[in-house]
Image 1 (cartoon, rainbow, N blue to C red):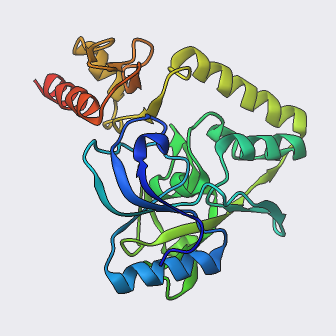
Image 2 (image 1 turned 135 degrees about the vertical axis):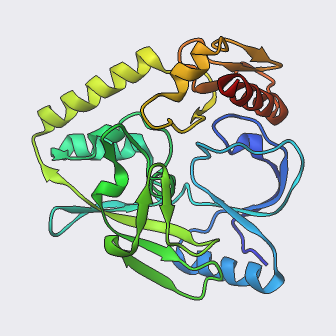
Length: 276
């Protein structure tokens, strides 16, 4: 039903950056657009639910078995310059691959993404960014497969509704295949200097040496989630194998053997204490 590039009964802990999660029925890794659309059509006809991931960042998989199929696009890594100061970037391109490409060629405007975990598909879906700069600001269009695999569409920026860590306007179950991103002309030295500065800052302030899913909470208006959690006295607090990072309180780290239940308890506790 799903073609050759499929695995069954796969632990989601192996596919997510936090390294937690129970088994999913199957994981499909389509090699190209035709394979993906064929997979989506078969799943739609059989009424089998699907979930899409790239690198498995910013994702929390539960401990219980997950019904359905995970579609993994981590093999989709094509990256090329296009006319009009743009880049066509496939969904599986990682932040580090994009940073290297831009540094080598002096392409500016996307440096803010240095060190933000994940792949371009996930970046677009959640409008990843830092204060004052988001990937949605650089999107010219995105390429999307419909949930049933019936068609592939190219959606211009004008019809996309980017918000703070959100993208609206896509049908549920749609799959982001690639994005056309606007770039500026710079120099390799200048782009590399900004990327190096951002990476150095992240290494000092974020727990990059242990498994995590990146920032857990969105920042509320006028404040920072990490500051609020730290002020609530939870920095370094541990449940099982999961810990609110002593380095940055908006990160939950897997110190070894953590479960999704451990992580969920820390999330619940942080909400409770901050709201108290």
